[in-house]
Image (cartoon, rainbow over all chains, first blue to last red; front, top):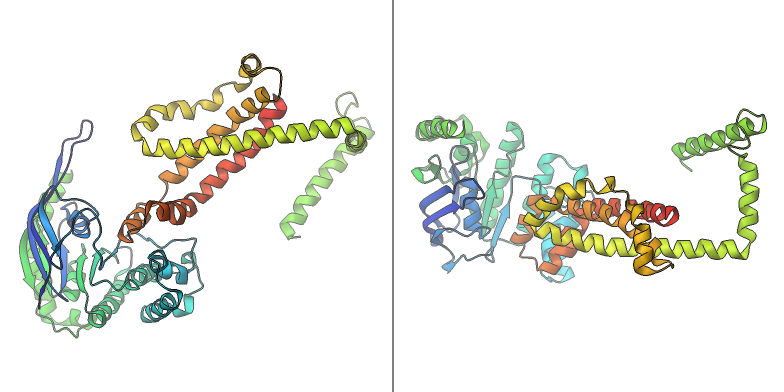
Length: 264
Length: 193
């Protein structure tokens, strides 16, 4: 597999504002993702996981270091071919499901016939076809998050950045959404970088998992899960699943205690 | 008409009938309030007069002018203040206490400034309405979810696309609230002035 994303020596320091001191949130951090890899990042609260996603997406500039996506530097804007799904519900309440999904394509000037074809197939893929004319307020939390994923997928991203997309959902729905995400990953062949605070979710979904330290976040362990590409949530009952989550928690426990002490 | 509408209409008609009855049978002095039917007859006579119709039209024009000015200036000032965070923080307490200022005391000053014509009235209506528009514009812009702003960045929208397709619809409930207040305040400012 070819290299898709390279992060080298990236740090992010939030400058001091008024009487608040500067905050060194991230790094120095190195990471290389292969084409089509499913990589998750776990870490204690406030360790800079979302900051990492922001700098990789081009939503924030790193204080130092470089990021390359498909060999080109990421500089100040979201690169073509990158889609991002946030934890918060970002569906536009004034648009129907169909119009939400078509939003970015229309703004990009894609022809009507192609918009129709892409939106129809993506809504079918995400199980939202029968809700095409509904408004987000008429959907459940899980369906709204699927809509946000659909809105990203219609752009056919080659890399998906997911910032705790299932954070607001209950455990059973998360497992089922995880299955859908795995199906989507297999069928699109996209590289996925998932930020999550759920060790189970990371262990179920990922090829590799990066464990971050307390702030400033750096990788303290990289865990290879060794799962087959064809997998679903039934692996949670396997002994190997417990071993992966056990290893993640072993690496994280001290860091979580440290993060808790820093916060109090 | 909806059931709620019918109830509303019945309440208004009931209140008018009660007032009519109270005035006719001396429970309310005629020197204080005249019966609603007499008010209606008076209003009809006044509306039949060419002079009154001209004055009403003149007042409505003044209201419309103060409304349009307050909408344009209030929205533009809201957009500017939203960007100038420090200036906004400095002005916040002044905006919060603005309606404690008795705007009508400026009327003599406006007569001196603009002369004895429609503009002092329009200025009072404008002063009364503009801050309601400004405050609601600021509120609307501040309440646009951060996820929408970040989504716009991910979609690489141009500033014009961002303004038309995200800011306007997302802030619309507050912009309309500001406009609704501006209509009432322009009427109050112009008529009371």
